[in-house]
Length: 184
Image (cartoon, rainbow, N blue to C red; front, side, top):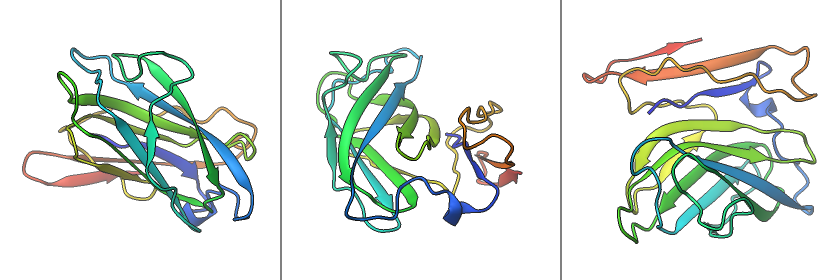
């Protein structure tokens, strides 16, 4: 796996993804992209948890995609509306499935979380298989790897908040012997 993350050079604590007002109720659009490989899809029940500086969203079952009647199929993007209170500056996402159904293993390409009121859209590129009941936690500040080398680069965000700012790109790989490196 290669986890590619882009964020403003001011630092992880200044990502400003989520509002710091805990009283406000917000809806998030979660875009889940299934990879384009054979048997990538799953019929398992998929769950997500998002954590911010203020609190964590409890486990949420991603079952009603607003884009497809049969979610998590090969090469498709499913969009889910998740209601939540403000979580504070975004820290991590945990995603997993229960392993139910035929061929339950799932190839997750990426997760993009859209907070429209703040204009932020961090994308976590995972590109790995997820087995049943094997949660994967993706952090903004800690990239990881499951493939020996993946040279694909993330695209720079195309929004009004990224214009004229500098971005850092963290890319980490891990080879067979466990030796890793980071390219900045």
